[in-house]
Image 1 (cartoon, rainbow, N blue to C red):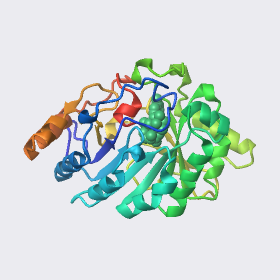
Image 2: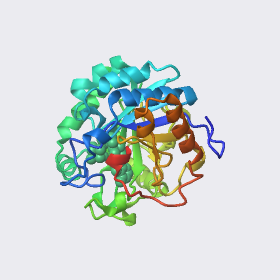
Image 3: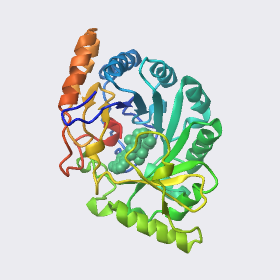
Image 4: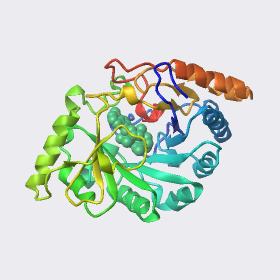
Amino acid sequence: MKDSFGRNIDYLRISLTDRCNLRCVYCMPEEGVPSVGHDNILRMEEYARIVAVAAKMGIRHVRLTGGEPLVRKGCVDLARTIAQTPGIQTVALTTNGVLLPAMAQDLKNAGVTRINLSLDTLDAEQYHQITRRGHLQDALAGLQAALSTGFETVKVNVVAIRSLHQDWVSFARLTIDQPLHVRFIEYMPVGNGLTVAGWGSDDVIPTAQLITTISDACQEAGLGALQPADDHRPPGDGPAKYWQLPGAQGTIGFISSVSDHFCASCNRLRLTADGRIKPCLFSDTEYDVRTAVRSGDEQAVEDVLAQALSGKPKNHAHRVGTARLMNQVGG
Ligand code: SAM
Ligand code: SF4
């Protein structure tokens, strides 16, 4: 399906819940998380019906996210239903990895082929500081489970934040002997500053600068300089630009959500856990598909999706941030 600017929209990111077993400082407040009432959250069969209509309209790829998608009961069954929906070609998952050791095989059997695991540091103390209640060994066990289960692609998402002084080289090393794709993502100051990290726009490290910093650090560590690797892109439509260490099995990607927005090639819509279609991450305009799906009228669902499609803005006009936090909009 095409939007008003001729972009082909074939990707739907679905937030299964706004809840999470962690509290990353840039994503959620520590306490007093404004939780959406149970009745306002889409039921699993409602997600499935919305996806069926979206697939008829041209959605081909679905990513399950959150909050933490794996804390939502029934997520494996939903993944299976979506994977079997006529028209859907791929089902992917974005997770913090904590519950993956117990669930990776079931997810793969259900038809999930791609896993993105969020991990911002390989230092145990810093991991606990960022996630407030997480333990690095759990995330690493999740990563190991993702790799050993044999998903088509496993990517590690690292949000780059200047104040954290993350150890880039240790992430780069992960890509040498494993078919792992590490992607550095520019920090987005979202949620009207509701999180308490105290970070601002100074903490965004522009991709061009980060590539040079990481390449220099890798050279200094004797790993060689980064080389462009867009020919070795991992499968999956993504806005990342890929680089590689000499002889590495995996790649190092960069996503410049802030410094170089990729709106011209945007192919996605988002579905929030409370049943709103968001045509753009950085816009507060939302379309109510929950009422439509609860009316039982398939045409009403199609109408809302069509409205959201035609309401998709050309770009986010340098605005970065929304009134809602990332756990609510499915980052
Ligand atoms: N809980 C899952 C996870 O952490 O992967 C899925 C949801 S989480 C909201 C999705 C992604 O959004 C994660 O990779 C997280 O690091 C990223 N994210 C959250 N807040 C962000 C922010 N302010 N700037 C950049 N990325 C952010
Ligand atoms: Fe939870 Fe993911 Fe947000 Fe961290 S980034 S608080 S793991 S939803």
